[in-house]
Amino acid sequence: MHEQPLITDLNQLRVFSEVARYLSITKAAQAMGMPKSTVSRDVARLEHTLGTLLLTRSGRRIYLTEAGVIFAEHAQQVMSRVDEATDAVAISAATPRGTLTVRTTYVLGCSVLMPMMTAFMARFPEINVILKFENHGSIASHESDVLLAAGPLDDSSYVARKITEMKLQLYASPQYCSRRGTPQNLIDLNHHDIVDKHWPHGAGPWVEQAAHGWQMTIKPRLLLNDMLAVSEALRHGLGVGWLPSSVAQPFLQTGALVPVLPEVHCQPIEVYAIFPQRRTASPKILAFVDFLLVSIGNKNPD
Image (cartoon, rainbow, N blue to C red; front, side):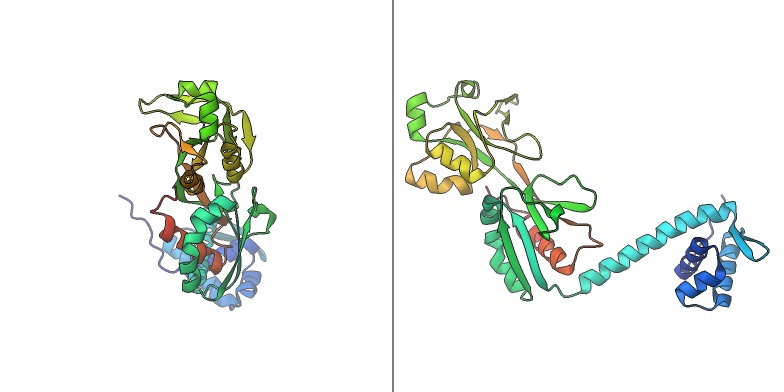
């Protein structure tokens, strides 16, 4: 078996990458602040290790050989990853500080963020937090550092980390059940008014799965863009709908809502923290997202 050459000096890779970029020993040396003789020596040693020429000279100009073109492409990729790793270590070692703006909905803010904010602010005393509760937060507008949302963001320049899941249950008001009857099974829901929240990242929880494993989809009669608005609509007897227990609990305590079909479950709503790619994310953002994952990742805020 042919033994692969072993490159032990990453600096030689960086030097060659710069020479390949500029196609000039002089310009590469100037860019790196190194003597030309050192650059030439590193390239020569690399060629000796690989057992092939990477550069060829014609007069005062240099060119990449076929092997040089192939090696340059891979060497530049390697050095890019090394730079990313170095940046990541530098970021993680920096003290998180400054003002952190987090955008989310009122329901996610109250049920997911608020329970962990005391511990977070005690852990990071140099971070000040601005929480913005909105129906449609957008990190792409650069008005927030982190977006906490139901569903990931389809944008490769951002990272979406799943934080937790929210389980939902069907509810209705006693007045509605008295007027229209209480659904006894999923088929009955076809004859009821359904109140639902608009889910911007795809189908909402009206794709159901009953205990026997079959599924159905029911078109809502009333569609709203906020979970609290759904709870108010249900309280006023406008139909049957899904709510997380954190939203429904106060209404259950006063008797304004009652559970409907408690044995029926929908797919949980996945909650994501969305933030810039780690290479551009600041220490305060990474600190917040990592804290979310540790504090909430093993919990389900129903």
